[in-house]
Image (cartoon, rainbow, N blue to C red):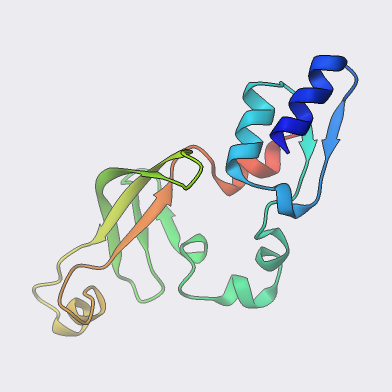
Amino acid sequence: MIPFVTHIFKQSPRVVQYLVADAGYGSEMNYQKLTDDFQTKYLIPYGMYEKEQTRSYHKDRRKVANWQYDELNDQYTDPDGIIFTFHHYSTRHDRYGYERQFKVYRSVKYFEDPKRETLATTKSGNRRQISVKIGFTLKTRRRNG
């Protein structure tokens, strides 16, 4: 998509007010490029949009989007009451070389409660952890345009 858009903007820089495409083009790399390099508004649903609208998605206890988030303490609480606190930052690169920044959260230790400690660890005994994308949240995608 980016080579095509680059070609269009080279020919007529202001010809496009809104760029419209289907969800197949809804990648973070494309959104970022359209926003940063072309300063254009876009109407492109992201790949998970339809699924996120379903009742089953909103009831799925495994989805971090359905967990409670405490902004003041920067921590998540899963439906079982297990608290995940910020642990470290992580950087990942996709196959196209696009860099993504994440915040990694780990479950706290429950020394006094063996049942909760079991819920806070993996089968191999490691702390459970989650990774949350920095800077490109669901709210960011929905505000564009």
